[in-house]
Length: 86
Image 1: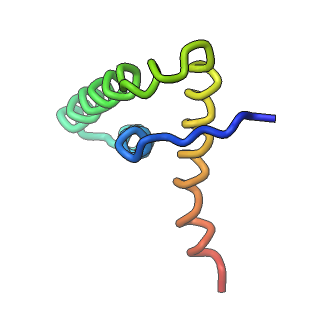
Image 2: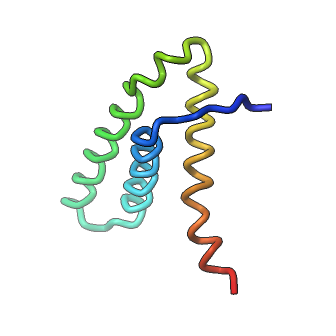
């Protein structure tokens, strides 16, 4: 069982923005826009990786990083699920 983590809102938002930029990049055909999106992904990756939260859970950071990704991914899927409901 995965231990519960309470992530700071700015960290969750950064991870959500990362997923959004990645999804946009996968559909983008304009070379100049792909450059912008790649830079955005790099900036967000640095923000996520260097967030002070990770220092507050030494020894558990890898599991927490995966939990953040899973939690955020599930949040990203929620709007789509709501659209399908009658």
